Length: 293
Image 1 (cartoon, rainbow, N blue to C red):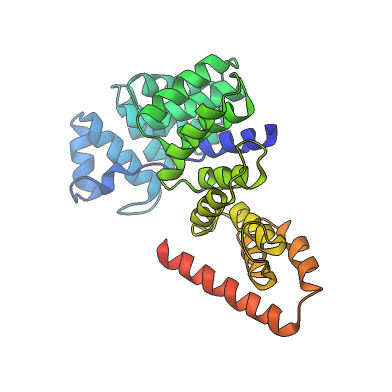
Image 2 (cartoon, rainbow, N blue to C red):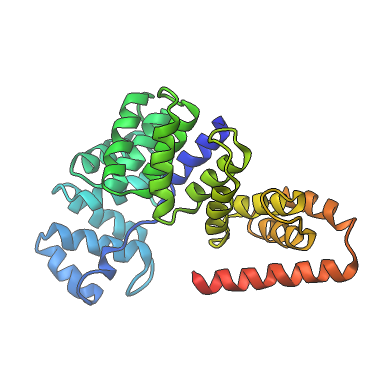
């Protein structure tokens, strides 16, 4: 359970930087620079994003940091968030979690939901500031109420296992379902597996299959593994070793290497023709997944 929580919070720190430059007018770097030089904080942020992501030219982290700092000093909350991520990951600057936390706090107080979610993770981990479960919950809630799916997932996990909060299955289900209905695959997997095992939620194999298949359609490796186990054992559906082989093969391909041992064990009772069909089925699923992405 603790490992699952840590994995969940680690994901927060890897949120991709949103490039607002792509959402704004189609200006060239030079044109953004002209606006930024005039003191426009939003233009300074966009220019920093262009330099960091390499949009409209090569990546230039030094210039990105310069413009983020100038925008952040004017209270531009997206620049504060972006600069915090650079400090947190040690990209272009020495890694400094305390400086990152200070910037995230400013951005979070200005209402930036990504900053709120990341700040909550730092409070939960005690990274860059003193560990504080109450502050973690406060900021996860702030981000979740703004619709942040990762914050909603993390709240669901905390309530599910009673990490820093009293265990509350109803609250856990609420937040996990909100995240899952937004298409967040780890939440879909967690709901599905919890319904399949009955360990956290009341066992319901129909709901288990529903959520696991949604997650598997996004190539969530643990969901693919779970479906493989269910197909191999006939849980909630007819036993199907070919489908089980395919699910487990796809799970391993997408990162869950432990699935290989289960797949190889199943293969000992399969014919070469069945194994071939399993590989073909897995390949077909992977192609369909790529087309949806």
